[in-house]
Image (cartoon, rainbow, N blue to C red):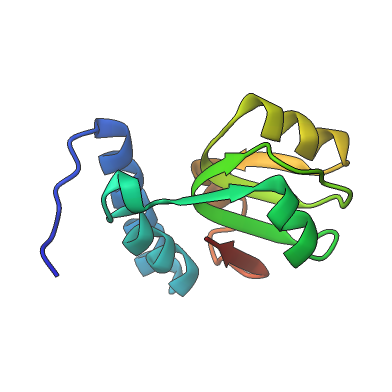
Length: 120
């Protein structure tokens, strides 16, 4: 597969950080997220909060390699980290008792990547 160079400096820095943390902590989850974010932006995951409600257990930590969208309802308290999220999605996560993280925040909190589920 042809390697695509990211021109957005924020994405480029995030990819470097994901790979560094993955190497230092032998955490395959961060390597997987980096691989997914290396794809073109049009192929990034877009996950609705309604999908999370159907497929995720309460108190789970979920990583979305892409964007979290606000369509649907969330009834469980889940911790979610995504590259980006709509304002309505963030409100629904907080309203259900969960927490929204950026990928950098979750990486700093859980560098080993234990107990994390990837969606999208």
